[in-house]
Length: 475
Image (tube, rainbow, N blue to C red):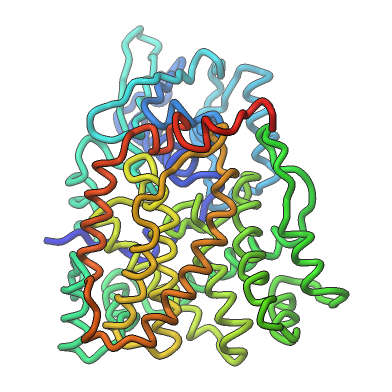
C-alpha cells in the first residue's frame, strides 16, 4: 500500500521561521507529552531534557528551535496560538525557569541546561531530537523523533510514518510517482486536481475539504497582507530590513482598503504595467517570508522557508491573469500544488537538512508551476512538465543560511522561485508534451541523487556557502 499524503499534510498552518526546525520540533514536543500521558507518566514528571542533534543543533538557535520546544511542551498549538503570546510565554519560561507542562503542571525548566545542542548527527536523519522525562521515582523515560521536513515528524523509520498514514484509509487513486498520476488522469479523463479531490473525499467530506482549503488560502492571504503592511527590522541579529512594505507602497500608491480581501480586490483594479508584474510577484513572496522570519503564521508549502512561492504565484494568477477567478480556482490551485509536493516527498525529500535548498525552494517552485499551468488550461502532461522545468533549474541549490537564520538568502530565494514557476508554466503551455525529453519522475530521482552527493556543509548546517562567506558579526 502506497503512502497516502493528503493536501493538508503538505499545506499546514503553523508558526515560522522553519517547518523542520520550528514546526517539527513543536509537534514532536506535543507527541512526547502524549506519550507521557498514555504511559501514565505525565503527572510524575519532575524535569524534561531535550537533546538536539545534527542540523537542529547547528542552526537551531537561528531557527527558534528552542522556543518551539518550549511552546510545544507548554501545550500551545502552532496553528491557533495568538502570535502576540509567543514572546510572552517564552520570556516567562526563560526568566522564571518554570514551564507549565502541557498547560497543566508546573515544573522547573532551565533553558540553558534543559535544551542541549549536540553537534553530532543521528544515523536516520539530519534533524534528530530526543526528549527525556525525569520522574519522581528517580527513573526516566526517553523518546527520539526526527523532523523530516515540512513539519512532518517520524520515529526511527519512515515506514512508521507510512503505516500511520495508511490507517487513515487508502486513497482510491494511490499515487507513488508522476507516471502513475498521469495514467489515472488518462484513464479517468480527469485533471490532476480532480484526481486529488477524489482522494481527499475518501478521508473527509466535500464541505470539509472546501472549508479547509479556503482556510489555508485565507491564512496565505492574511500573511501577505501583514507582510506588505509591516515595517522594521527582522529579529535575529542580522539587521535585515523588511522590504515588502516599501515595495508595496510604491506599487499600490494611495489606495483605500480595510481587510485582506478588500486589499486583494484593490490590487485587481490597479493598472499593472509589464515591469510591475515582476515587482508585484516579488512583493508577495517577500511579504510571506518576512512574516515567517518574524515568527509569524504561515502555511508550509512545502516548508516554511519556501512558504512564499505558492501564495505569490496564486496571487499572480488572481491579480494579473484572471480577475474573475474565485474560490473554485483557488481550491484547484492548492490541490495541484499539494499533490506535486507529495510526489517529491515520496520520491526524494522536502528537507533542506537532507537535500539542500533544492528540497525547499525547488519543490515549492515546482508545486506553484504545476498549479498555475493547470489553471491556465494546461493538460495533465503539461502540468507535470511545468513542475519538471521548475525543479530542473533548481537542482543542486544549497542551503546556507547566514547565522542559521531563515533570512539571507532564504527570503529573496522565494521571489526567484516564484518567478521561475511562472516562467516554467508558460514554457510548458507552449510545448507539445510529445517533445518533452525529461519526465518529472527522472527529475525527482535526480534531485534525490544530487541530495545524497551534496556535501553536508551545504545542507542547512551554516557551515558552508554564504553562511561562512558573510560574517554574521558584521551584519
